Amino acid sequence: MRTFQLRRQVGFVVGCWIAIGIVAALWIGVSSRQAPGQARMSLREDGDDDDDDGDDDDDGSSECDSNADCADGNPCTRDRCSHGTCRHRARRDGTACSDGLFCNGLETCQAGTCVDGPDPCPNPQLCREEDDEHDDDDDDDNRDDDDDDEDGFCLECVTEAECAGSSIPACDDCNLNGVLDGCDIAAATSVDVDPADGVPDECSQFGGGCAGNDNWTCFDNWNLPGDVYPNNTGGATYSVTLDQSDVVFLDATVTIDALRIVENAMLRVTQTGPTGDLTIVTGGGLLLEGALSVANDRMITVPNGAVILRNGGQYGKDPSAAAEWASASLLSQRLEILVGGSLKLVNSMSLLLSDDLRLECLTECDGLRGGQTPPVLQNVNGGMSILGDALFSGTIVWGYSSSSPLELAGDFVNHCISPGGFDFVHGTLLLNGLATQRFEVAGQALGALRTGFNDALGMHNNFAMGAVDVAAGLGREVTFENTFANIDGAGPCEEALYVHHLILRSGSHITVDNCRVYYETLTDQGATITTTGCGQLAAIPPCTQDSECADGSACYHDECISGVCAFTRVAYGDVNASGGATAIDLEDILCALDGFASPAVCVNADIFPCRGNGAIDLDDMLAVLDAFAGADPCDCGS
Image 1 (spheres, rainbow, N blue to C red):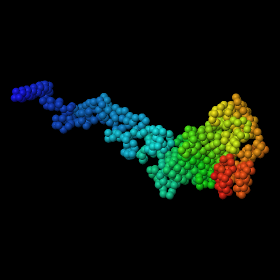
Image 2: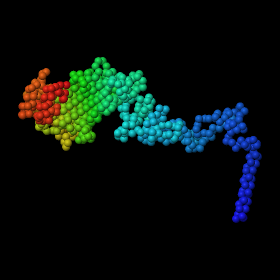
Image 3: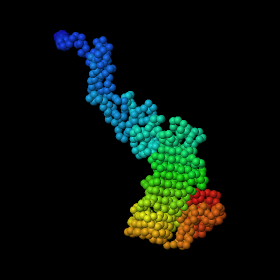
Image 4: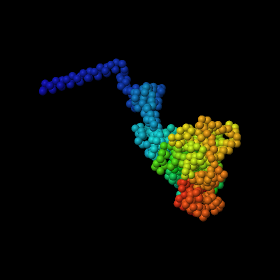
């Protein structure tokens, strides 16, 4: 044991002498090349600081006095003052650096340069830089807090389907530009500064801050900085949202970018006098999932976008206004009525479209489950003009009974599969386009028979029409065709148009292309008629009794006069068509009773619900009593 300890002590002493010898050799080598004062300096990192104050000592003739004088703003170099000269040594590749921005990734040094890193927000996210007024509720899970100099966050830029059911601002589209707000802000196509709340600044939401005052011009009703209400003046633009059962009265003439009325909200455009019109100028247009009610001669103008009605959206006469006050006009580029949407024109209201009309309810209307309703367009007595196409698809409700014709310059594209919802037997379609117009026939071809207009119950459910008028003019071309199977299982030449009155003006040219067109009367003022393939233009035999003309409408008295069906508009409940100021009287009640006993005695007593049900029953008698008391649920008097 003692021998081992002695050996260990001797080994330790020898090792220490060897280490001392190595250090001495190094010191002698350095001393042979440098002055003693310089040896100490050479052990420093490129500095000249004999007084140990952290900076090089200088005689006044150098370019730098301290390291601070050599700062070049490049985080990827070490900046030093050496003997009055600035030296910049590159930091090691991969060293972290920062340019103060979050959205260009985490930067690293490469060959002395700070290089951007990968996108911190992977697709489909978009990035937004932090600001001093950042809302802590904005997507905190995606924020980067590792570097205090680089604050920002990732915004989800997702599809509407992926956003279904979400209430976060990024998933909204408040300005109706087709881009979700989160993507709008992240891509700088919209500004979110005042306030920075995740909502584009141009979007104004009604808040109802004016107690007891729902006027548009009460500025405390809006979430806008300053004492203003939405109106595009002085360079400011606004996209407006009404929601959560808001009821707003438009009491001024205003211009805005876009308008959404959702969640059972209502905008009342009923002002009398010189002001109270609404103009919407961008392609965002007007989205209705609430109500827009109108009265008087107010104008709603959407020249560059669409009016879209869906999910409970309604456009029509203000409920508090009398029918005679309804003369408002809707002028738009396009009109789209989708599942749950409804538009109704009464009295002298009007609709003018510079492009297409579209009613569509396809797979979502299969069975209309879950309380869904098909798109509805009813023109009881207004005016309509369409410069584009009229397109109908799937299950719809389309009623036209106005004495003013529907003026159409484009194609009549009827891909509707619900003949029971198509009611045009009292309307007139005026085809006045400059280019060739196409008309899709849709009814079941039953031959030249009156059953093509009505079934055994007197219901017009075969896409029949009151009148088709082809306007005069050389080169006026209309082609009747059958390119879509409206009737399930119908093959070529098995669909037809049944029309009470076909009017062909001078100079026009019609082609019946592999389909059938049957008419009750034909007025030919000098048109050219061509048939191709199985195409057929044929007359229907004259009527012989009133029941052959029954159409089931509560607003018309149906008669067969000289072999032709005549339809006279009557007040609701005037089942004997007596007319006059006291149209609904005891005689109508007695007529309904007689009709209940023998339908042929009072054929027009089938008025409930508005289009009848093919039988005169207790509901019809009660409806006549309601009419006697002043009820008009079918707007027969509009």
